[in-house]
Image 1 (cartoon, protein in one colour):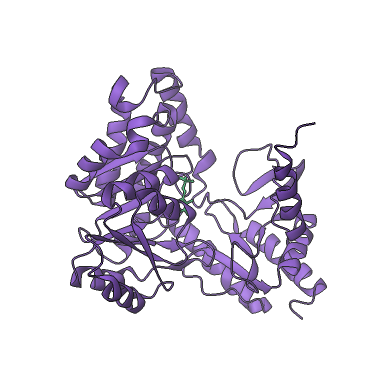
Image 2 (spheres, rainbow, N blue to C red):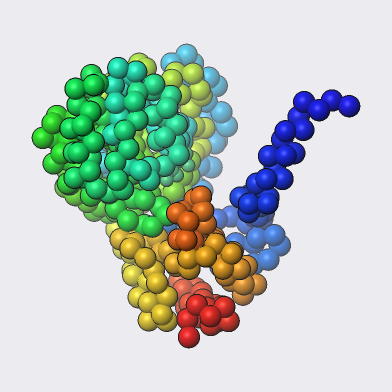
Amino acid sequence: MSKRLDWIDEEIAQLKEKGFYNQIRTLSSPQGAWLVVDGKRVLNFCSNNYLGLANHPKMVEAAQNALQKYGVGPGAVRTIAGTMDIHLELEKRLAKFKGVEDCITFQSGFSANIATIPCLVDKNDAILSDELNHASIIDGCRLSGAKILVFKHADAADLERVYLENKDKYRRFLTITDGVFSMDGDLAPLDKIYEITSKYDLMLMVDDAHGEGVVGKGGRGIVDHFNLHGKVDVEVGTMSKAFGVVGGMVAGSAKIIQWLRQRGRPFLFSSAVPPADVAACLAAVDLLESSTELVDRLWDNGNYFKSEMQKLGFDTGESQTPITPVMLGDAKLAREFSRELFENGVFAMALGFPTVPLGKARIRVMISAAHSKEDLDLSLAAFEKVGKKLGVIS
Ligand SMILES: *Cc1c(COP(=O)(O)O)cnc(C)c1O
C-alpha cells in the first residue's frame, strides 16, 4: 500500500482536532433574506449580498437577455479572441460610476489583486500593508516578490514610522489597505493614510470589496466616502458582494489601467467573466445610478439592528458599516451560539481564531437591504432567546 498521500489524512485530522475544519452547508435556494439551508428555511445573515441584488428581477432579466444575444461563454482570453463589446461597456460604466478615468475588470476580486500588485512592484520594491489585509492582497504581495512591510491596523502614524525606517532600502513603495475590514466592519482611515502617502509621494491602493455599493454616495465606495477622488492610485473592487454577481474591477487613472491591460496576468492568461454575468453587473450599475433607495435601506437596516442589539445588552464592537459583529469572546461559545440560532431559524456565522484574534470570537451578522423590518425583528427575538439561554445577556 502506498503511503505517499497519508500526510493529508494527518493534516485533516489536525484541522478537525483544532476546530479549523470547514463544514460547508448546502443551499438549495437563491440568495436572499431567506434561504433553504440543508433542507431548512432560515433567515440569512451570512452572505455579502448587501443590496439584495443576487436574485433581483432586473438583474436576472438582464442576464437572460445577454444569454440570448451572446451565449454562455467568452471563448478565450480577451487579448486573443477579442473582447466582447459588453465587457468594454461595463468598464466604461464603472469608470463613470466611480468618477475615475478608466476601469478594467477581472474574473474576481481575488484575481484583481493578484493581477494588480505584481504590475506595480517587484523585488526591488516594498509594500506597506495593513496587518489585517485580506488574503488575496497578501497573495498578490507575495507573488510580486516585493518586500512586505506590515503596519499596525488602521494606523497611519505607524505606516509613516515603517516607511521612514525602510525608505532607503527599496526603490518604490506601494501602500495597500482594505477599505472596509469585513471581520469588524471598520473603515480604513484613508484620509490619514493619504496624508502620509502624498507627503512622501508613495503609490496608494485600496481594496474596497466590502465598500463597493455600500459606502460613499449611493455606494460609490470608500474613495468617494473620504472625497479623495483622483488621489488614490488604485481602487480594487468586487462585483460578488453588493453587486450580487461575480467579477473584480480596478478603477484608477488611464495610465495605470492601460498598464494593467498590458501586464495583468489574469487578464492576459485567463478568460473573462461570462457575458450574462457582465450584463447583470451592468444592471447593478443602472440600479445604483437610478436611486439610492437600496443603499439607504441597507444602512437603515444596519443602524436599526445594531441599536436594538445594544438595547438587549449585546456588544456589537467597533463597526462603522452595516456589518454587525456580536462579540462573544470564547470560540466555543460562539459556535454554540451559532448552532442555537440555526435551531431558531437564523443562519449567522461564528468566527473564531485564526479568522479573528484569539479571545475575540463572535457571530458576524451580515445585514442586507433585502431584509424587511419583520425579518430583523424575528432575528432580534432569536438573539434575545439564545443570548439569555447561554448567559450572554440577562
Ligand atoms: C471578498 C474579498 C475579495 C475577493 O473578492 P471575490 O470577488 O470574491 O474574489 C478581495 N478582497 C477583499 C477585501 C474581500 O473582502
